[in-house]
Structure formats: structure tokens, C-alpha cells
Length: 77
Image (cartoon, rainbow, N blue to C red):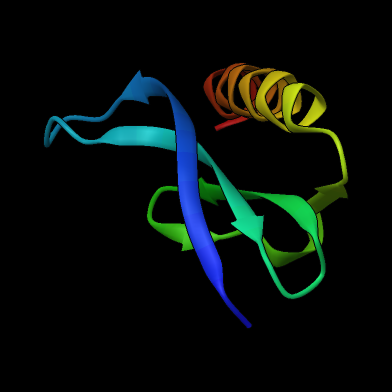
């Protein structure tokens, strides 16, 4: 498997200055797809991975996922 990071979106600063939520977009050359991975408070949320063959879709989905998860964490934590 060959993943190459092509972008990321971050939301919600924590007390230590790090971001609470980060969505990272990777290009998977083996499967010829883009993959979005959501990381919340330093933990990869494996069930939230998103796969697509469209770069723009991956980038916009990453932004939406990071923003929505950050808002959810703020509301329910």
C-alpha cells in the first residue's frame, strides 16, 4: 500500500495548542483512489475513513468531516 498525503483540514484548538480534529486526504496509488482519514484528539477514527476516486470530492469531504466532528465534540463533550 502506498499512501501519499495531499492535503488536510484542521478544526478546534485544544489547550495544548494542537488541533482537536484533523481530516487528512491521501492518494492511494495501489487502489487508484483518494482516502480521507479522520483523527480526533490524536486517535484515528477508523470507522470514519472515506474512499473515493474523485480528488475534489475527497478534499471537500475532508473539510466537511473535520468541521462537523469538531462541532459535535464541542457540543457533546
